[in-house]
Image 1 (cartoon, rainbow, N blue to C red):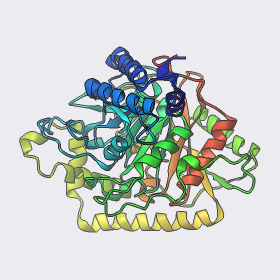
Image 2: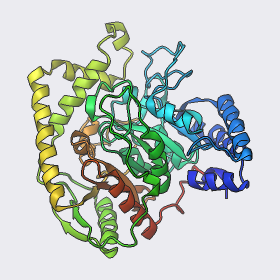
Image 3: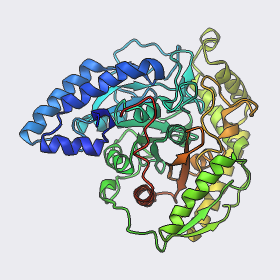
Length: 467
């Protein structure tokens, strides 16, 4: 098997027993990036020399039996929304100058460095992460390794495409309305949007407390291990939660799901879902029942909060570009300019009304989870569509029109995972969303791991990717 097809957990096992060197793994990943990224456009920056230097340092530590952290020598990519010391973070925008010195790491980048991870580059994002697909005036169109004519989703589309294609086993993404779950569903990868504050974030997102940071990986075990690194404390984020008492990597999947109360909502009461997607998600829910969970089909009981979400999101977009002159604004993605104009027209009362909706949704879901441990839904109602478009042909123009299952749980700040649950007749991946109560990240991970063990997806690799 190619080194680029190995998970982080498998690489670390090889480092321990000496059968794999961090240098070999990093060289293999960099070669795969050179081979495939011209087709995928998953990276906006590749840091090959720095990566090889860090890999050699890691190899020396492993030879001495003194690894410096949980991910020593594992290749990782970081979305170009998050600061990385010594490298520009342009956020997909021509309005951000690449000039240095770029002295700061985001909390995620800092913790990864401390644990010896090898950063191989920065992954693409739409401009300022504003939409659910990945293309921008700065970096162009990113593509899906299952079908290069299709989008990988977004806004962490480059990150998910990189993991799916074997361009590093670990990726860090951000999620303000579905931005790790959307591309995970479109690329057949695993992700968890953790409870808000579980992963420290700095500088604060202009989209406020909608924005989460999370891992995109090939397996649940890799995501759990990566979360143990990312949740390390950072005093720059005043809203960060303390690290969990028990490391996520030590949370084991239960032998069965007996006693687990699971709600299944096929539509959340308001969404339309493609028949093939609905069938695959329903079959995946059946696996939970086969494992012993008590599954009941029920909606959580709220209307589509899209207009209130858009008020919060569009206001955040307007805040992002507030310092820009009219001439610089003319360089922005045309769709982003439209959203900014809408956001600028919102009043403080509009924003407060949207915030009140968040409070109401939080109360509804808090009460809902007193009866149900988990909520299962499709991650998305559709499969990947044409790259370079904000929405599929014939759909509502804005990206929020085709992501009805993701943004509500940014508003409520709950942990929500996307688990691969099968493929359509056209060979495109579909995702199952697993939502837990706030702070129940370990429950979501352990349940996803039980599903993964019963229904492993790892044997299915995209045609543009490792063998």
